Image (cartoon, rainbow, N blue to C red; front, side, top):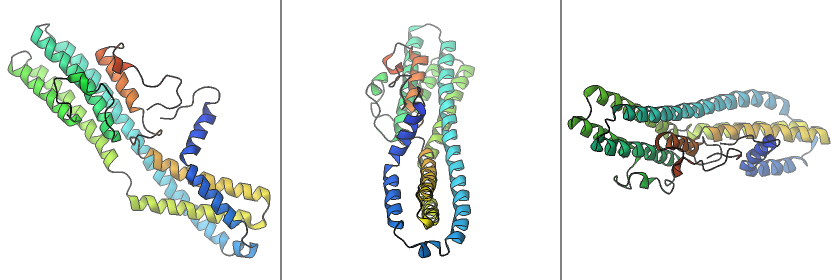
Length: 294
């Protein structure tokens, strides 16, 4: 996640965004340089009508796509908020049923550590990367290759073990499994967002539409070859192309890019809540003044 920090925070944000679209900027310059030598008569022909039609169409499609992309981003943020809330509820429920016996303390400690491991493993799976060092070691009792779904199943088995042993009653079992089910539902929603992006053919169509409009717009502004008109045409091209690219970036909020949600920050928060702020996994990977949180 890109953040505006400090007096020049906004400039840093703009610089990071432009760096992410550096190849698009290069293409814009190449296209502009190619259109400049074209004679005025050729530039003016049918350009006004094409500009009007393409401008309306491009604005509608880019606006629709970016709205949908933000909705996907916000839904992912809401689901991760639910994971944080359910993790805290899990911690509270375990504290409520703790009788202080050796058996209970051992099992509940493992369930807390497993919950923290689950969140880190879920973040890694959503990004398609390997878990960070130390994640699997949180619960050495569990298989090192356990997936996020496996860890939820292991939590359910421990709940069943406590219930079968008479350590918790039916109400406590229902309370714990309700939180476990909520985590499974949030995970399913996150997997849907990750696995089902906007269809590629629609994505390509919108990008082609944005580029066509940008080229025709520059062609129209460059008709008289005045420096101010050329600069305005370049600015218009830049705005439309960057707007289309921003929609592409934010519709993938868990793709291991700087536009991601700060998943590791969420996991550090959960680690601190369940295992204490002094635990190594509770320390954020980036400082509070960092421009990028991952």
